Amino acid sequence: QQQVKQSPQSLIVQKGGIPIINCAYENTAFDYFPWYQQFPGKGPALLIAIRPDVSEKKEGRFTISFNKSAKQFSLHIMDSQPGDSATYFCAASITGGSEKLVFGKGTKLTVNP
Amino acid sequence: DVKVTQSSRYLVKRTGEKVFLECVQDMDHENMFWYRQDPGLGLRLIYFSYDVKMKEKGDIPEGYSVSREKKERFSLILESASTNQTSMYLCASRYGQVPKYEQYFGPGTRLTVT
Image 1 (cartoon, each protein chain N blue to C red):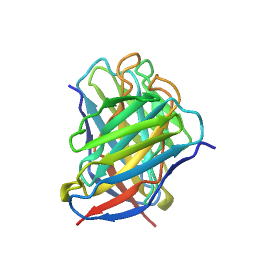
Image 2 (cartoon, each protein chain N blue to C red):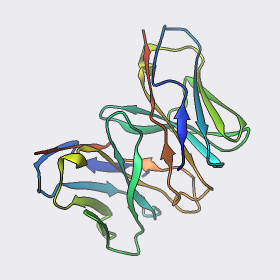
Image 3 (tube, rainbow over the protein chains, first blue to last red):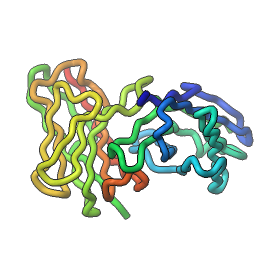
């Protein structure tokens, strides 16, 4: 119930491609869904976040799509660049509940030049 | 800029040693967290603290303890290090109780227990 399942574990795309990372959850009480980006040797940093009252949120080349009925959300990276190569984590939490974020297991993205 | 610093980037310890990992944040954040990161397992919460001297167990607290004597500092203690505690340890801090606020992570400490 508290898990967030993330796929794929790794992803390789060419520059300009559109990698898509998917996450699924079971607990319908989750109401905050952030994505964190981690470069090698660094800690994760917040990339973009969404709440379930919207189906899509876009920030620059990064878009979150949210499907409440399917309990799934995904990250799309438009016109991907080698500098986007990083590990991406989805997460979920409950406002007013535990202070904890539940993280997916991560996706290692490689964008080849 | 929020800054979360961790006392060591790399640490090598022997089995049975007591290990202290220190984390300091400079933004007066109430909440602080310790995670471990392992390949294929993602980020797993060990302990968190929402106030000075307050602590809550996370998902994998066994073999660990924590200390928060001052608001800016959160320490993770391995009472008797074991080889299965070889991992990357990440500290994070966050303003307030509500999860919508960003968690700021430190650069991590890669601990090797031999």
